[in-house]
Length: 195
Image 1 (cartoon, one colour):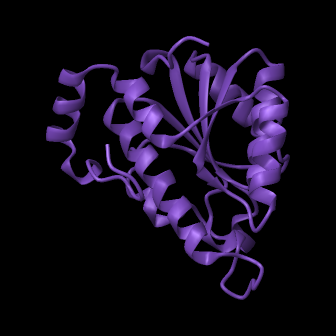
Image 2: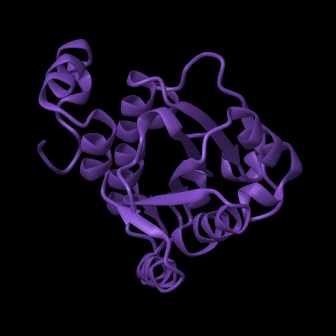
């Protein structure tokens, strides 16, 4: 596959809602969930910093809460949050129309849950002719389900990249990296790794 072109990219944030996994769930590694949400937030900040269009979905926000503050702090003011009833985001007509209106072919995906909504979305986007790229370290599912989701995505041939790889794909050269870091010092230390 060719490099991920920042000018042809959109970021799709799937159900990054903290209450999807409430603190009462004993089967959830809550520290891992928070790390994933932090990573989703960092990717969102980078996307906003390089003017990549962002679309956000929320599933049943009355139960699962709204998008996590780690992410919402980086969202541009004009971003619309879509309620999602069908697990695959592109199978919801209003979200499909919003994606089409962006006129971008590469849809970068972060969010929850890796084995359900993220995976359904990636497959649905590919069926519609998009290039679906999942940022594997900016997705989350509880316990073994995360690994199952990544395995299915690999099996289906969906592109998987790390958040660090995406950063360098979007910026592409040293002058751009230095300019970005100077303009966005809050994003020069991504959670869990160094650039």
